[in-house]
Amino acid sequence: MLSSQQAPEAVPASAVKTKWDTKTQQYHGGQEWSLLDNFVEDFSVTTNGLGIPQKALQAAREALDVCHHYPAADQEPAKTHLAKFLDTKSHEGIHARLLLGNGASELIDLVTRAAPEGPWKPGPWPVQYKEYERSAAALGRTVLKPTDPTPAALTCIVNPNNPTGDYMHIEELKQWIENTVANDTVVMVDESMQPWHSAAFQEDSLVSQSEWLADIYARRGVAVYIMHSWTKLWSCTGLRLGSLVCPTAAHCTKLKKVQVPWSVNVPALKFLEVVTSEAEADFLAETWAVTTSWRNSLVAKLQAMGAKAGWEIKGEDFLSWVWIDMRDEKVAGEAVARAKRAGVPVRWGAFGYGCDTCVRAAVRKPEQVDVLIAAWAGLVEQ
Image 1 (cartoon, helix red, strand yellow):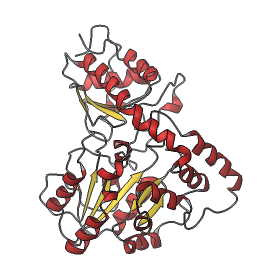
Image 2 (image 1 turned 90 degrees about the vertical axis):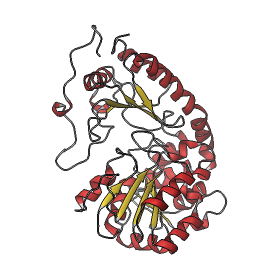
Image 3 (image 1 turned 90 degrees about the horizontal axis):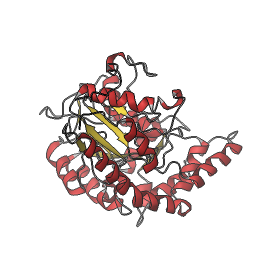
């Protein structure tokens, strides 16, 4: 319930203007900040609260001096640096199965095109990042609900799930795939937010399961691809950096044959080379050190604010955002409007996700969070 001192009622989601062509494009956060005269921080995206790593940023700037040359066709040395980052023990196996792309979006589309004909299914959560569904629908695939028993030719799992923050640990994830997907089908597992888990994130990631990935393909014909959008962890969404670990080197070669050449530009390749090196080790260490405490502080403030209204805040402690069910569409809409007026835009679940009572807010520095909390003061009766 809105408090008696509320601002004017928020505009319905259906009437809100957007930069997206909603007839052809999938809504995404991160578009409002440039239109705000009083912009403070973008809470609508799930990027790193520390901002962009400065050594890698400087390397990308310097790379512009050679932008009159084509990017390296083999994506080196950035590809080798990323392979070593993903597998600190024996990167050669991953390197042969690794493909870089123009953000994860390009790679999602590549795999969706290459997968066998047939339905697409998300899973296991009822709401997840929409780019997979958009790509499947655009290519004419039937879109199934997660609970539909119909076998899917292509299954997509976002783990940790964006926006809800649900997470399956590695053995649970493997068991879900074994029990759920049909033989001779394709699975895409999006682990874009999984590296926030800890300094040992690989141990709870499919990147550590090369033997199982090879086995399930040999035994059942299930091809499991591991997707990463690196623009969130390293807060470089404008550079567009994604990677795909394929089930076998042959799968990687097949995709490379149809991938648009030079899809990762010179500054992005240089950024990736530096950000995965020892030069930015301190940035990652700080990320793992502060994100959970910043998130816990944000959660505590939100729980106190929404206690009477029964707000539910979802997501693992290590994640870079919170998913807030405010229990009331009008309250959620008003929260979005107030945040925008205060220069701290958030993501309304009504757009794209169909979750009208929910809001997603990024984990940010305490002083930036204070601006958001102040904007929401009195949002519900205490």
